[in-house]
Amino acid sequence: MTLSLKDQRVIITGAAQGLGAAIARRFAEQGARLVLLDYNAEGLAETVKTCGSGATALQVDLSDRAQTDGAIAKALAELGHVDTLVHNAAILDRRLFADEDFASFFKTVNVGLQAGFQLSHAVWPGMVAAGGGAIIYVSSRSGIIGFEEEAAYCASKHALEGLAKSLALEGAAHGITANTVTPGMYMRTPMSNRNYNDELKAKWVDPIMLTSAFVAIAEKSPPVVSGDRIDAWALSQPIDTAKNA
Ligand SMILES: NC(=O)c1ccc[n+]([C@@H]2O[C@H](COP(=O)([O-])OP(=O)(O)OC[C@H]3O[C@@H](n4cnc5c(N)ncnc54)[C@H](O)[C@@H]3O)[C@@H](O)[C@H]2O)c1
Image (cartoon, rainbow, N blue to C red):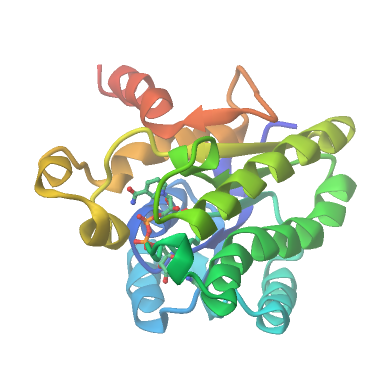
């Protein structure tokens, strides 16, 4: 089922800043009705201002199972059902594995994987009933290869890659696509600001430049893919070039 974003109801996590805020702004421009989840209330309020009247902010710590369930219940009450889920929130708290502790490891894993499961499981029945939907997990190169000082982040992103592949198989009969998206380009975000060296900062781009890929996946523009790992930069560039030609 193809549905213009203008008629879609969408949940976006991690929308207070960075890539999530850019996706929210872009989806709002396309007319989507949005519920935005993040623990940073101030940042969320800023994003909502850029989104206009079609966005609602819910402050929630997505590492906390009960808080996340509460936020999901409010989001579903607001939206009715969800056409597209963009699970973008993540924590990258770099440390050696020897310095990792249970709490910090599972905070990262819970924001990435546990919240990803909770959100997907909650929106699934509505997508089945509606005859389709799109589940998008923001991943990373850390979803397919390991990096030093990123054990929790890599574990979380690898798990999301696997979850998406399984959901893609089960969703096929219901018109539900499930994909991961990797940025594919250095982005100017607070996470990058903390982790990039000067060489990478010289190349970074505004994350809005990656958002055409998210629009295409949410709207199921042909060729429709599921169970795939999509490079946001590589998909967005030709779309934007064609649009501006
Ligand atoms: N920045 C990069 O270079 C890069 C590279 C590859 C992948 N990614 C992925 O892109 C996505 C966006 O990254 P970004 O650079 O915009 O990151 P960011 O840190 O700037 O933004 C992440 C957002 O997630 C929110 N968040 C974190 N923990 C939360 C929690 N417990 N509860 C609720 N919200 C929480 C933050 O408040 C923030 O708004 C992430 O999934 C990240 O892993 C980023």
